[in-house]
Length: 478
Image (cartoon, rainbow, N blue to C red; front, side, top):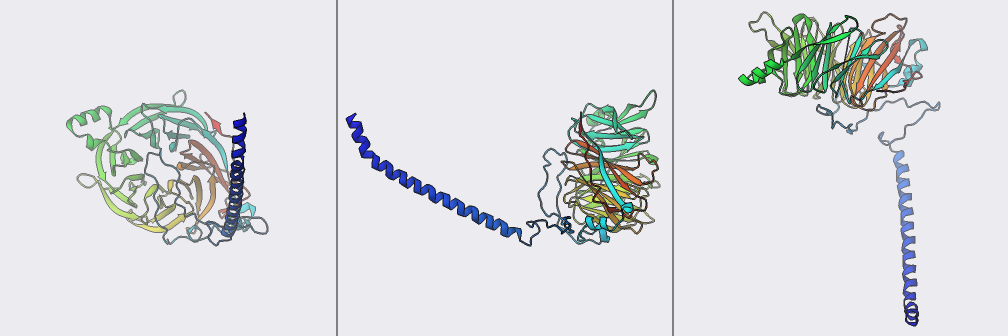
């Protein structure tokens, strides 16, 4: 005990000295931290007064309304496309385009002023009327016909929705998964799957609505025989199918693929009658006009126009025109009902459009619609409306006025992922109402299917009424 007491007396001064040094260092560190925090606050406050719009606080007007300037984001930050089966969006540098005044990329969009300059009778309103989430994964395609809406997804199920109730009334199943493209023509449903094949169903109304599977394109037995004799490469796409289109009057089905080709199928016997080496990069979209002209869009930043000449010996398709999209890959196409306008959505967020002349080879560039900050992934048109869906998770509704200008009517916000597909129709499948309204169905990679309604008085000039914003209904899960 005596030895321990002597040891403690010897080391106590050293312990006291170490404690004082430690306390001093703690005080120094605390003071340094306070100074750094103060400097950071001063730096943040000074940055808020910066003229750079990327760091500026959104100012409010004396009435508390939003600022009048709509600034386009120049961020290259993209949503995740790790599970998306197609190539991710690529951006090109902004360029000057000749456009109509209200659709110019350089023209500020002022929804508040637009609403204030129009009376309530001439404004437009929009809302989400239904939102459905199924356990099918990403929604990749939508088609409409015969009073039904068909949706395809990552799963092997095509869901059938009855209108106008928007209730599920049936399913189409296959042994393979991932429905990447769909078309409905008369009583036939055509669906392209991830295995590179197209399944065909026929709708029947005997004792209720039923769908009977008719064929698989290419035929399974034919594909095996062609593989044995070495002709499989001529029959089947060497890459995933990205789009399909139908020319009923010509008994022809078109399919486009990431292998840069377009295949022409004769519907009555499911035979491939032609393979078109169409583009230098993967093909993303196809659309056929009533006069039989075929349009194809590709990652090579072009839209190509094809015509089949029946008076020629082999009746093959011939390239008659190439349209450029200002160095930006074209992801989607749509035609107006009268085939008078062709729209193409690009990865830089622009929607280019061309006016069609008297002949199929006469297409004049009309301008571009700008509003999306990421790639435009789908387009739909009905009457004078154009609907666009984007990787920025929004849909935009445009109205084409009588003078040729385009007015943005609404920005539909609600999805939490890129919008892959959209369809639109007037009223409830064409019913007449006092006010003209457009029903829109959008499908997203977030797995949610939404139904929207945009109402516009017939005397409206197409301005946005900000007070009637989007409304969200309870999500139905199944």
